Length: 212
Image (cartoon, rainbow, N blue to C red; front, side, top):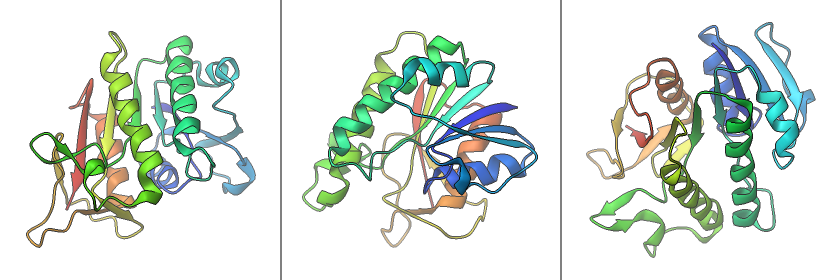
C-alpha cells in the first residue's frame, strides 16, 4: 500500500515506519526534520508542517491511508497544540480524499472501571495529562464525524521500546492488564497491531487497544 505516516521519526511513529517498511509498504514519511531518517528505497521523507492544512493536504493526495503519530509533547501548551494539529490532520485527510486514517491514541481515555477513565484517576501523571486530554478529545472528534473512515489505537498504560513478539491481546474501551495487574506493550508490538489493522481492517470507525 501507499501510505503516509505523520510523525514518522517520533517515539511511536518510528516504530510504525519500521514495521510498515518491513512489510513492503511504500511510505511517505511526513516529519519536521527529514534528515533524521535513514534513506530507504520504499520511503520518501518529506518536511511537513501539520498546522498548514492546505500544504499537508497536497502531500497526502494519492495515498491509500494516513497514519498519524502526531503528538505535542515538546510544546509548552501541549493540549492546545495537539488539538490544533489533529484538527488540521483530519481536515487535510478529508480534503485530499484519502480513504482512511489511523490515529495513535492514548491510554488515558480507556476505562479502568465502568464510567471511570484512567486519565481521571488520582494516579495519572501530571506530565502526560495534556497529551492524554488531547487524545481523548481527538477520539470524540472522530466519533462525531459522520463519514470519515477512521480507527484509533490506544496503547497500554505503559509503552516503551522493547521486543517485537507479535503476541498480545486486543480490546475495546477498557484498559487491559496482565495477570500481575501490569498494563504494558512495546512500541514494536504496538506497531504490529496498527499495521495489522491497516492491512486487515477490523475496527473501522472505532477505537481499540493493545496490551500484553
